[in-house]
Length: 353
Figure 1 (cartoon, rainbow, N blue to C red):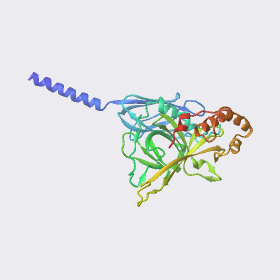
Figure 2 (figure 1 turned 90 degrees about the vertical axis):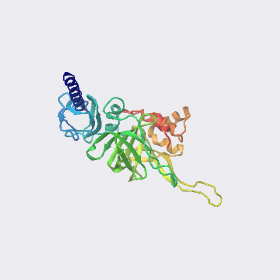
Figure 3 (figure 1 turned 60 degrees about the vertical axis):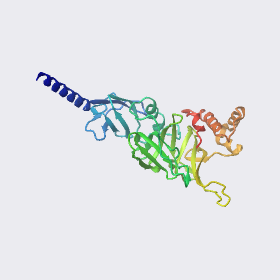
Figure 4 (figure 1 turned 135 degrees about the vertical axis):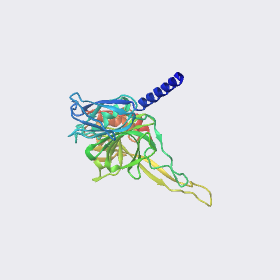
C-alpha cells in the first residue's frame, strides 16, 4: 500500500509542477522618454492587446506589467500629445524592453532633412541592435511568382524584412512586423514571424518606413512621395533616402514589363515577359523632388554658392556624376557641410535591383 501511495504522490507532484510551469508568469518592464527634450515621460498608458493588466509610467519613465503569460502580444503605448506606439513582443521570460522614445505629435527634425527624426535616429537603432523585444532575426522568403508567363516580381525586395513603420494617422509607430513592398500596387504586406497570414496596408497610409536589409543587415530608409512634388504634382510611391541632410539624395525603383520577343518561326528570342527594375536618382530641394541632371553644368548648379568647391571635390577625387556610388560620396560631402548631418551607409548605394 505504501508503494502505491508513493507512486501516487510522485504523479501528483509531477502534475502540479507541470501545471505551475504552464501557468508561469513574467514581468514586462521599460522606460519611456521624450525624443524632443530627452525628458522621462510619466503618465503614459501601457497596454497589451488581449491581456487584462496594464500600467502607467511613473516619474522616472518606468513601467511594469506583472503576471504576463508566455505568449506573443501587441504592445500599445499612448500619452496625450505624443505619437502612439505599437510593437509586437514575444514574452518567454522576464522582459526588459529598454528605452523607448516617444515624440510629440507633429514633431519634425529641425534640420529639414527628408527623414523625420521620429523614424530614423531613435527607436530604429535600439530596435535592431539592443532591444530584446523585437522578435525574429532571420529573413522570411516569399514564394516566387509563376515564371511561365512573367519572370520576376514587382516587389522592391521579394524577401520579408523586419521593419519599423510610421503611419500618417495619429503619427503611430508600428514595430515588430516583417514587411515587403509591392511597387506596382503601392502596398505594403505585413506579417508576424509566427504567422503564415499577411495583411496589407496601402502605401498612402505610410509616411516613413525603415527595414533591415537581410543581405547587408543594415537599415534602409524610405519616405512617401506624397510628401513631395515632382514638377508641382504629388508623387505616388516611395523614395529610398541614401544621403539625408540639406539636399538629400534619394532613389526610386521603377518596375516595368519587358514583353516577350520570341519568334515562333525562327525559335529565337525570349519566350516570357519579364519584370525589369531600374533606379532613378533625385535630390530633394524643399518639398520638390528633382531628377539628377545628366550634364555637369546642370549638376553643379544643385550646390548653389559652393558649386565651384563641389566641382573641385569631384575632380580631385576623380568622381563621376553618372556613377551611383560616386553620387553618394558627392552628396555626403555636400550635406556634411551643414549642421545636423547624419551619414547613412554607403553599401546601400550598391544594392542594385
